[in-house]
Image (cartoon, one colour):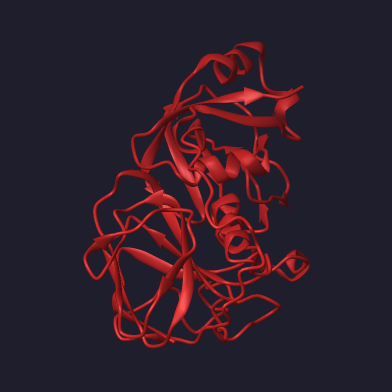
Amino acid sequence: MIKVLKAGFYSSVQDKGRVGFAAIGVPVSGAMDAYSSDLANRILNNLETDAVLEIAFGFCAFEFLSETTICISGGSFSPKINGVPVALQTRIHVCKNEVLTFGHNVFGARCYLAVKNGFLTTPILKSRSFFQNITQQTLLCKGDVLPVGTFTNNTDSSNTSVKVVKEHYESQRIACSKGPEFDALSASQKEVFAKQFFTISNDNSRMGYRLNEVIENALPSILTSAVLPGTVQLTPSGKLIVLMRDCQVTGGYPRVLQLTNTAINQLAQKKTNDTFQFVLKE
């Protein structure tokens, strides 16, 4: 088991999410940066469905109440065990009573803590992912004790460490395809999407990222239609919202773009005031 000594800004249990429940209004949820989450599980030779901790913006601490093996992936928040720095994307053995801390940000916005055989919080609708009104908790709190899988010293996987790919965090090119309402845009609006750099506002969360820039917009609202993570909506004010993992399942704003899965993962590692450019894939 692992005890939360300091919960940080926004830490939660996440996995692959609740796939297949949109018809009853349930968001997918799951790890914001699925690439990094999956990588941590692979390094530990876990199942890809095993739950991990998603830690946004660091400044948290955990005490290990039993021996286990861990892997930290995603953004860097200066992780240390008993005050000694540890590497990212590397299999690390942890002894009982050792303390793992995350501090100041080096790069990225979110990191993932995987443990051997995963976190074993209660699954609801086939997922352990935290989400308000579905799970008992939305965030981790100081004093929480999290059950984890039984430790086995299984080192069958040869991938004990993987090099950090900085492009995943630094690229300003966010790949996307045309959304259902893209062709309703004027030529000048399409040109803005092709050339403009956009800035993430301070209104960003697991539900969505609002962008600062304003695009002249006379498009009418649409009938309530399906949306999903990565959908880019053009609001009546001319501002854009990029929907993320905890987004609603329907919306009434024009859906002008749809991010690729890789692009969602990359955007999840960007912070307030970071800039990027949409790159339309034909």
